[in-house]
Image (cartoon, rainbow, N blue to C red; front, side, top):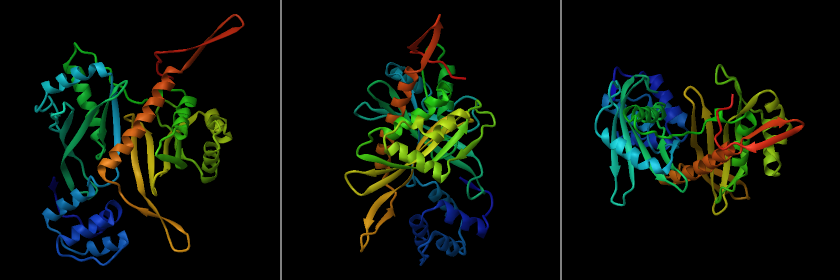
Length: 375
C-alpha cells in the first residue's frame, strides 16, 4: 500500500465511524497508548480523529478497514467434476508466473495439502483510491477453494474487494485462451437463463427450503428489477407493507407466485434481484441475516452475511439482540451450505424449463434438458 498524502481529520473521522467496528477502532488506539472512553462508534471516531497518526499508522488503519474479521461476501463458479484435473494442470502451467499483458501483476499460486486437497490463490495489485481516499496502491489476495461435491465441483472464494470477483473470472478466461485444446465448462448462476417467473421461483424455493439448523423467519429486505436485458434497468426496494404480505405468504406455506403483489410484479416485467433474510438457529440462541444479491455489469451473484449475533433475555422477559461477528470458519461453513442450496435450486429450474408447441388443437409440453438463455 502507498500513502500519497495525509488524510484530513474529517475524513479519518468518517472512516472510523462508518467502516470500522468499535472493537477494532479501540484496539487500534490502545496499541498507540490512547485510551478512548466511549461506546458509540461516532463518539470513538470523534475522539480518535483528533490524534496525529504517522504514515505507518495510517497504513495499519487501512488494514483494519479491510480486516477479514468483518462479515464475509462470497462468490462461486462451478465446473464438472471430470474437468478438475485439467483445471489443476492448466493452473500449474502458469503457477508463479505473472499473466501476460497484465498491468495489475496478477499471479496464480497452486497450493496442495498432504491429504490431496488443493486450492489456488490469485495475487494482484489494485490501483484504486480507497475509503481513506488517499491509499492508491494495495496488494490483494484472493483464495479460491476447490470443493469437489457429489455432482459438480465448486470454486468458492471471498470477495473482500470489489475487483476480487472479476479477478477470478479474468484468470478463468486466461486459462481458456491458453488451452484451446481443452473445453472448460465453467458456469455461474445467471438470471438471464431463467424467465421472470423462474427468477422469483428461485428465491421462493430458497425461502421454503429446510436450512436446518437455521430456520427462516422473515425477509428483511427485498429488491425487484425490471427485465430489460440489463440496460438501464430499474431497481427498487419493496415497501414495508408489501414485504409484510410476502412474509405472510411464505410463513403460511402459500405459493409466492400467487401473492397479489408478486403477480403484479410479474405482470409489469419485474423480478426479484436481491433478498436479505433473517434465520434463527433452532439449537441455540444465535441468529444470522443472509443476503443473496444478483448484480449486473458484470453479472454476478454474491452470497453474504450482513449481520449475526444471539438473543439474550433481559430481566422482565424482554428479548434483546446482541450483535456478534462469527468466527471466519463458522461464516464459511454457513455460506457454503446456503450456496449449495441456491445452486441446486437453480440447476433444477434450468432442467424444468417448460417448452410447448401446438399440434392441431393439442398443446404439447415437455422438459428441455439443455436450456438456452431466455430473452
